[in-house]
Image (spheres, rainbow, N blue to C red):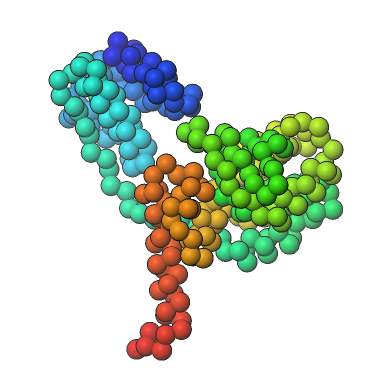
Length: 273
């Protein structure tokens, strides 16, 4: 690893205090370039970097690599390691509407869960909770019993280490209480497997796939979509979801516009003319 790259990794680890996962991602992206090209990253020009990165056909993966490279060169310029800033343009990604489920679809799926066992109660509570809270699955699985107080949910292990508090529907809290009281486990984590240890992401994925045919993240999209189409302010939804940028939340406005268009198409007398 070059001296400049070591300094950058120390900077994002100590000064910016990024999460371990983020630091690891930056380090992996940047060290792989130096290793493959056998050259210090700071000595590479834009054409060389773009030529190397062109092997990544997935545009989202490519943009993540480009983001890491741009962050490194911005740091080098500010630290006077280089006189010029190398800034590579991101690949254009077409905006796709997020997949989501309607309230009716979620509730219909819940009606087929056998809640006579504690596992059934857990699956029911988990799906209901994800739809009622809009949490990321990682945030959901890290929750402890003390993180739910009255009708509020305290998300301590949020993305980017940013805590937030969101309201939780009574029906979801009741389902969680019934599941927890039936399971008999004494550990602090809410979501447990049959051994009584913390539920894994894979297991959570299997649960939502089994009953809904989607990943847990689709329930987060469904939560946001329900709020936006119901008339919620975009900035409020941003805060509830824990998005760092409003731009991330704005994708849901496309759903709102489509919903308005569909309503006009169905009910306005001139829509068929």
